[in-house]
Amino acid sequence: MLIRFKKNMEKIAMGLLSFMPDVKNDVKKLQNTIKEYESNPDWNLYLWKEDDDVLGAAGVRLENNCIIIQHVSVNPSHRNLGIGKKMINELIKLYDGEHKVLPSDDVQEFYLKCKDNHIQNEEQ
Image (cartoon, rainbow, N blue to C red; front, top):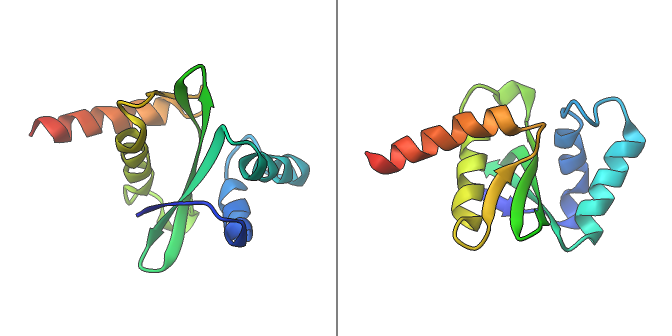
């Protein structure tokens, strides 16, 4: 289930985002990223929760009436189970119609795989 990030989940969110290549090993950049999600109304961070465990994080930003998916991260011990795809598809459902949903350059390849899967599932 996709849930909206709250301040009391900051350590979990930072841990998950630390697996992203663009913030990996850069604590200052990670702290700035979390601060941006907390303070910028155009940035929204979501966490993926299953059975009381937070397993993933996905971040979006509003830009020119488009939602840009800029971060997708899954706990390494839960990868290759479809969690990233579930997060992408839930974000598409959440924002589609209200805004055009697009990937950032960093998540574009993964997004296209997930979006194609989302479209195929709707057609069945």
